[in-house]
Length: 435
Image 1 (cartoon, one colour):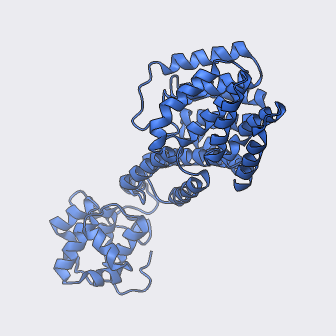
Image 2 (image 1 turned 45 degrees about the horizontal axis):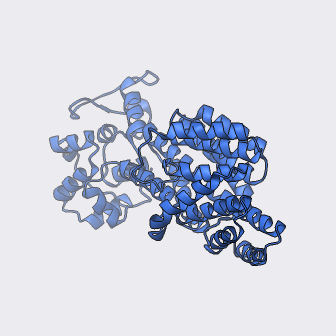
Image 3 (image 1 turned 180 degrees about the vertical axis):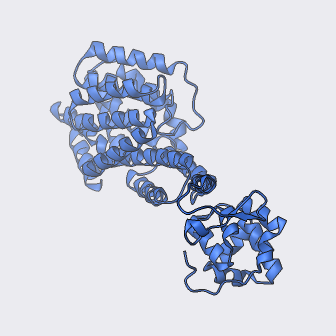
């Protein structure tokens, strides 16, 4: 690649045969090479940057020890420093000119040989393959920070308004999309695909919470495609479980059941996705009014959860917290009309009271209040049921995908002719308009 017409530094040929220069070339330590060139020629960092068409700040970072750079940057450096063919090849760059005129550097970098036009050159092919595998624009630090960002975003899920969190997830997805086009190693590509899968899955979950149906379907398709490409069974299973929740909120309980069962077959045994999909199956059975199957699913969840340790970050949406089992049991029993839902819902609220004050579980508490209200209505504890429902509706923590659950409580209060039903309806409508 030409250096845009900039004047190269005139570095004498003998410089490139020095032992320390040859070592820097073999190690691809361009920072060390720049320091040697600067010392040998007396050039400033600004002059180095001008010669290679690079900003001074970038030159400073290179000289501070950045050894891995894009191939086009290396080529600009080679052009800007008038690097001869043998040095380019040692650095891993394809030399200019036809193959029959390329001088190949041998092991010590001080001699060269020629090869006939059209004859295979295994050394050059090997160098080029090694270069393509090793050269990267991504790097360990970038990937590690992206993986950490995925965990941070998933941990913010229970406490952050979904529209606000979705914006952050989309920004990270956009950045990952740009990196997909960058030069990277095979291992880095695999990790980047996994990061993209988790981010797409979280975006789909937030879209479902906000009732963005089209966007949710698109993000789920992307997450599933990336999971298949990476061979990541847990992301794939989470995609099916998330889709099961989406169709359950739309009232398609049979489809939710089939999806949650499919997720269990794909998920690694005992994984968070496996537990969550089993719990989702129980909720689907409950909506279908099948008490025996509902009880069986809840028992399987309890068995899966019993050996699980509490995760370091229990707020993480994709790391199953055993404490969730009580909340899911409360919801499932309330839906199937089991009076035992009352005690489970009270237990959830009691457990979460301190944590909710600290801001960790407000959404889970609001859901538990709706479950408790529904359970209390079933046993004719009407005043308390309306009070809990009112608290949930006023909390600001009932996401749009759960509005139907709130509406069930409002409708049940109205069907009984309760005086509080009017206030509940007004609060519900205000919540819905606000969303």
